[in-house]
Length: 301
Image (cartoon, rainbow, N blue to C red; front, side):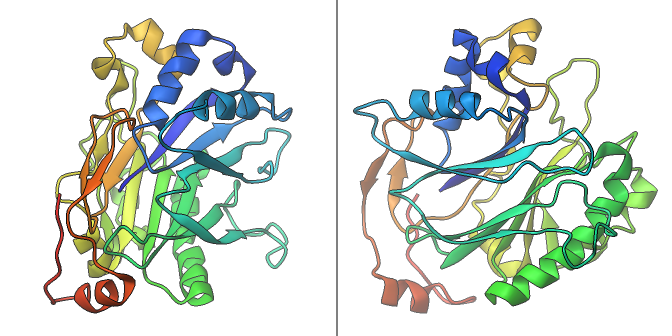
């Protein structure tokens, strides 16, 4: 199962009104079973509707379901987190919009994460909690550190360790220095595994090589559920042979992606349109028993 986070720079009506950009966005999204899109700024909802119409055309093999947050932010500038997922691959079992009701706005997270919990019957995990992140650049250090407190809250709320934190962390210079990075609790706590290395360029612009976008998982069980070396950026500019100008019309960020180990054989040509399910599939009772840490289980790739 393939998961991604993608900061589509200022996703709104201008993006979907450009046929070439919309076509590329649909092609990118088709690569994933779950994708969280950041920086949705269209308060009219027209751009989201247009994207969903393009995604779910008749006779498409997979149908995408939408879940989107309220408009978030403590200034006049607002954004939304948008999840798109294949409803034949995962089932939504919980949602949680973190907010400031208890703190009365005294915490440091400007755009409070919209958190989803999925049942993942085709993977080695029973469930998956996804915490999307888009930090305010100048407050990135404080916001990233406070994600630890949010993680603890969500972990207790849903009684699961299967947590993935992903999105645009702005976790590189000039916003987060190497020295300050060491003091961020989800970085210093070795139970958190940062899957995108500090030397990975997640930006489209040829003028920098910053590693702003990240995927972080908690615990050894989650780490073992990740397909080795699958965490990376998707360089859509190279894949689709776009010029710098064409690529930047899509976004100034690349998606960051990761694969989770599945219980079935799956073939994917890269656009998500020709998946083939086959091989041995364990039932739920066997899956729970066989996937305990340290035990043997059948995984086919």
